[in-house]
Structure formats: C-alpha cells, structure tokens
Image 1 (cartoon, rainbow, N blue to C red):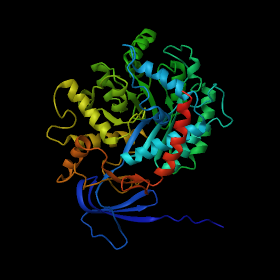
Image 2 (cartoon, helix red, strand yellow):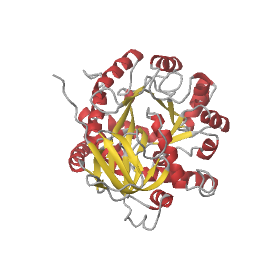
Image 3 (spheres, rainbow, N blue to C red):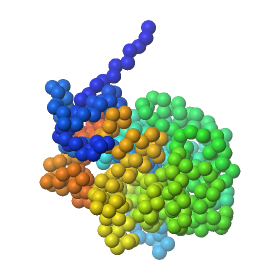
Image 4 (cartoon, one colour):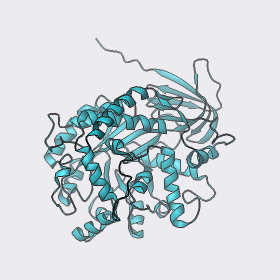
Length: 463
C-alpha cells in the first residue's frame, strides 16, 4: 500500500512585498508545503487567503553561528589587562563549554534559533565544532551533538545548513592542541564517520544541507585541508580566515604567506567557499578574493564585540565581491543590527556616510540584497534572484508597518528605517512555509525559553 503525502497549500495576502522584480502591491503568495509556488502582484485577495498585515521581505540567511555560545553572551564584559582581546575571550569561552552536556547544547541552540527567527533570520549555517565529550572522548553516536543541533532546528523551524568543523591542531603549522580544545578534535578518518552520522540525523529535517568547515589554518594543516577538499567535492565549504592580527602573523611565520593569500595560492577557492571574517587583508588579497566567486561571511556585531577590526567592505564590493552576514558568537541576535553595524563600521573608518551600494541607491536596500544573494549561495542553494519569487523556499519576513520607525515610509525607505532607525519590528515569520513567528513572538518561545533558563542557571552556578 502506498502512503499518500498531503501537501498543505496556503495563500498569503500582503498589501506590500519586495519581489524579485521590485516592490509591488496587493501581493498574493501561494505556498505548497515548504515552497513558494506562485507569486501574483496587483491581485485581489481570494476568500481563502490569509491576510497578513505588514510588509513582506525575503527571509535573511545567517551564514555563521556557534549556537552554544549564546549562553555566554555578556559574561566577558569586564575590563581586563591591556591585552584583553579575542584570545582572552576565547579562554573564558573554553571554561564555559567544558561543562556543557548534549542536553545543554540542544537547549541553548534552540533558544538561539528561536531568537534568530524572531529577528528575521530564516536559515542558519551552524559552524559546529563541539563534537566530543568534555574529556575529549567520543560519544557512542559520533554525531551526538550534531544531532542536538538538528533537534534544536526542528523545535524552532529554522532552516539548517550543518557545517561540522574539522579541528586537529592548536596553531599554524600543526602545533599541538591544548587540553581545552579536546572537545573539538578529530582526524580525517574520524571526521568521515562524523559526517556520515551527521547526514543520518539530517534526513529528518526538510531542506537541510550538509557542508564541511575546516576550522582555520590554525586548526587544519595543509595536507589535511587538501584531503578534505578532495574527499568532499560537493556542498559548501566554510572556514575562518584572517580574523585577528595575531592569526595573520602566525600564518606568515609558518608559511611565509598571509591566511587569505595562502588559501588563494594553494586551494581551489570558488563559489563553494565561504570565508568567515577576512578582517585583515591587503588590497591585493581583497581584490583577488572578490574575483574568486567565494562569499565572505561577515559578523559585524561579534567582530566589534571582540575588537577584531573592520572588514574592507567598500573595496571588496567595488571589486565585485559577494558578502553575507552571520551572528557568530550570538552575543546579540538581530539581523537589522548586523547590517547597521556593517555599514556603520565603514562610515567610521572612512569618515563618510552611505558607503555600501551604488551611488544614489538606498543603503538599506543595497545591504539587504547583498546579504540575501551572498547568503543563499554560501548556505548551499542556487540563488533565484533577490526578492520573493516562485521556486524559492517559503521563507518570508514581515515587518510591522505600524511601528513608529516605519510610519510614513514607503518601499526602500522602509528598509532604511528598519536597518538604521528601528529596534525589533519583525511581526511575522514564515520559515519553509511554516508560520513560526506570530505578532513578534515565536510560537514555541515559552517552552524553549523556560528550558534554556533552567540550563543557563545550572551552568552558571558551576563557573
């Protein structure tokens, strides 16, 4: 006997929406299961349509997250010695994660994903490196913690591109890892097992993607990286590169080249790749990377929080480079604030206004279009244009047009106000066709936040 699959068809009606061909009014979007199957502008609302008040936008991809770090947000904001930087923050993070169980990882990740959806992110690239037990031993299920990431995505409804991280060393040139890094470590054979087990977990998650994440040139040596790229010839490849100045100097001491330079010279960098941060690049590296087809994953809030530096976004964009945004450490989860921080960093460096996008164009529109196009590619999908269109997944973000920051604004001016003048104005979110945020709140927020509170209180008592 064959089992029939029932596909739910939903019709949504918006007064205004950003479509692939621009802003349109009286828009009817038809969802069939997880996909958009039809978009009609200047339409009448049929009797069976659900009228969603507000302004509809495409969902925003979050290309770089370490979800478990949400639990340490705000715990490293006491002034230390003058050398207080990424590396001292990392030691605090290591102390916290040493005690996290798989249950804890799931609870914290579920909260992060609920908050991402409430902020307008509809798909996340989870750069997942917390694979082992606290003592470094393997779980019986090699992908136990990856399975908890999948469970958190299922609870929240967020789309997931899972990026298991390969991590084998403690510094450039194959330096030994430290005891604090025992939870991250793998070898090539163990990583193959990890990926196979991760793929099994992902089978229960509609629309999921699996990629690989060689952590960085600090954690992966040249031979291992070459083998990873050869063995895994499809799917996205994400990698940290040139985030901090010390990382650059260590790479030069080991190889004679800067991290981005070394990757461009030695690896087949192309559209499969998403290099995270790339804060410290020379003009030549910036131009070469822009021409490679790779996406740069920028995390402006985290990069500012850690004092990493400012990415050369203006020069990168002018050279044709693609970029996207991520919430990284999840110290603050807000899609509009990531975009605002990116543009403001360029203004502060250059002492000028409206730095990204074409002359005369809306900065808000330019930022949104750039990170949607780059983000879709980085997370393993074929871009189908920027804006809501048939053939895309049913990822829709709705802004509350009655919010004071948006009153009187029309079309691109709405985006400018949302990004530069507003806090939380997301009213509704559809992720893979499911209505997961209603009137600004996730449908499972209460249960997820309650579980998180119990977990966080217990973990903090042990610090």
